[in-house]
Image 1 (cartoon, rainbow, N blue to C red):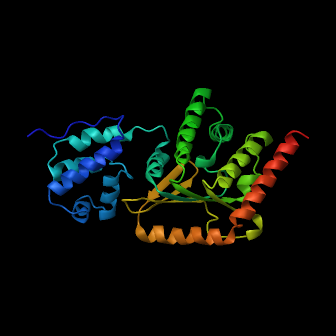
Image 2: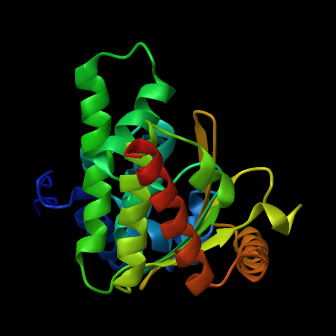
Image 3: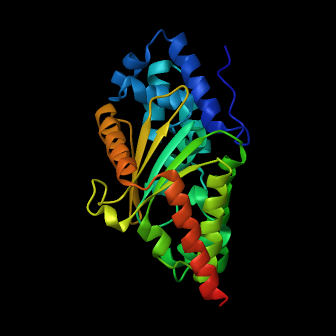
Length: 279
């Protein structure tokens, strides 16, 4: 009997590979928990692979082929899901972000990628890699702008962002760039497309002072949380960790300005930048 066909990389290979995994698992009569044990992983992790919110790594693919009797299907086709326009430490998180129905993001130092303008993204990437060729910077900017297209849908995903006041005050790319960037964020908030709160300096010390965090919820898979540092990132699915950091985000929301006051502050700071640029 012929095995499954190779996947077409142009047709969301991660989602297709996840569907093939579910089919092969059910054909083998295994539950997600049982298959997870064979991979030394949780059943929820298998669910994330099947839903396409996590990518199948080569070491997992080898075991899956052995356990499920699929030849070398998963080993061959997991390569199609490994190609990404994003840095390695962020690629899987960006792919999960595209499948999320709800995203909650705390950003301590900069405007989150989903809310960035091209000029702001260009300034961030140039600061990150001051000696990179211009074409590399533009590729990174294009990747950020591709992510922002998630917000073209009128309602999904729900995006709730808590921005530290430092993200508003740090002049990134110049005052004109900041004015445009903050007006863009305010416009999305005014249209009801995103919910934005500002954590003011006056809030003092808080629970997330060590860095950013992003919580992602999915329709058919367990939630994920993503931590990011300088050139590093980690995607975590441990339920206890997700629960603890969800509480952290709720504390940030409680300490932040209301959405209405946050919007007023964002627009006021944007106006200040615009007036300073054009007195």
